[in-house]
Amino acid sequence: MSALLAVIRRDLLLVMRRKSEVLTILFFFVIVTSLFPLGIGADTALLRKIAPGVIWVTALLSTMLGLQRLFASDFADGTLEQMALSPTPLTLLVGGKIAAHWLVCGLPLVLLAPVIGLQFDLDASTLGTFILALLIGTPILSLIGAIGAALTLGVRGGGVLLSLLVLPLYIPVLIFGAGAVYAQSVGLDVGGHFSVLAALLVLALFFAPWATTAAVRIAIE
Amino acid sequence: MMWNSPADFLAMGGYALYVWSSFGLCALILILEPIAIHARRKAITQRLRREIRAEKFDKEGMK
Amino acid sequence: MSSTIGKNGNQFIHWFKFSSPATFYPLAGKLIPFFWALAIIFGIAGLWISFFVAPVDAVQGQGYRIIFIHVPASWMSMFIYIVMAVWAGLGLVFNTRLSAMMAQALAPTGALMAFISLWTGAFWGKPMWGAWWVWDARLTSELILLFLYLGFMALQASIDDPRRADKAGAILALVGVVNVPIIYFSVKWWNTLHQGASISVDKAPSMAHTMLLGMLLMALCLWMYSIAVALMRVRAIILERESHADWVRSLEGVK
Image 1: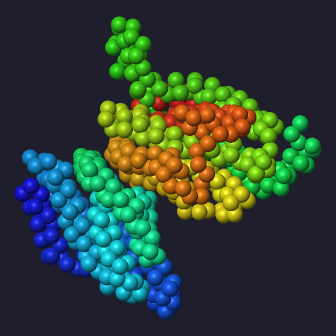
Image 2 (image 1 turned 180 degrees about the vertical axis):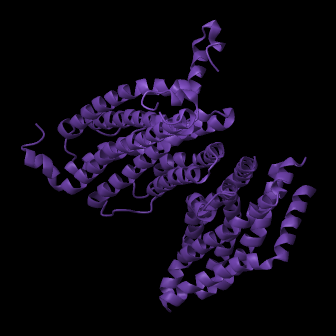
């Protein structure tokens, strides 16, 4: 447990020393979501309709931008190999890095969502659903994305390849996450969407760290 | 017989575009794929032949 | 791994002789014409039933005949993915090169089957249900399947070290396996545009017997074709990856 916290603390410390890496990703999220109201104009009905999809897709893309830095620097300077050799289970350490990634790239999206949502003229209950859906969904994105990040470690064309691998796996999260928000905005029941999201989170929590660890070992050897 | 004439068969009751596009694409793929694999095989065998000839040349010199 | 293990005459042990690329290569070469012959036979029989025996549909007229390509291709796209994932997983667990090569050989064929499924589905959907494409569960997950195939192929193509490519691809293939049951059960779980299952393991099929026969024959045709083509491709892959080996260099057609 302490090893887990130590890894999280270390990653957060490293991020704090180079805040620009993360702030640019959040800035990307804010800017891109702002482009849509600017481009479409003041048609609030249309904005309210596209908001779930647009904000979710931008969240997906932002998370993916952050995935690059999940293992890359540790792989480059040999820290990842040291982690693999240490007595602590590698899965635990990998889990810690994924948790740190979510704290840095996922949680800020959740906190920014209300602000973004206002640009799209979403009402309070829809915003509330949005925050909850992102809260459940962004960890799934970090977990699944970590598998892709580990698989493409040190590979040529890594960034684009990462997108090709990870985006198809993100599609169910997108469908149910955006679906939940849309359902709330038109007054339909959101229970089904949230159940599936929660199920996806549980599945990801169980299998993703394991698959990521296997992929990390393959990349290291 | 199902069809009154070859023209009827080709027309597929008005659905000709859809039916023949579907079967046509499938037939095309089933023909092109083996051709592509054959080309791949030819590429590797030619490369190996060249390599072996080059190695023999290196070993035995001009003959 | 050779016949020294099989001294007790156990049939099962002899299979391991073929787990080396050197012994599998000629075996595959002998099997290929056999599977092509089966594919052609089933194809002719299937097409005959599809066009000349199966009756006109009451609702969809002659247009429904696309089913004889669409359903077999969809089945094959799912089946090939599972077989590919199994081979890749075996390669990961037992550290065998040939299993990984087999997975690599299957991927393009599976991707093409998924593409045929999506294309024929679109050409069937347009006249019957008025849309080339809808985002219902089954179509979306079949599209994801195509992306998974392409991702598998792209990942292996990008990694220079072949063994690392094999193992990384295996993880990706295994992660994506969860998509296949989703495609299969999506029509049961979600009541959207794509029609429900007409064929199931435990109930009598709800379509005319000739139609079912046509579909099964076409499915068998595509299955035999896929095996033939995968064996052809794996032979090319073996040549590429084992090119340094003596047995390759002494092959007819190469030396």
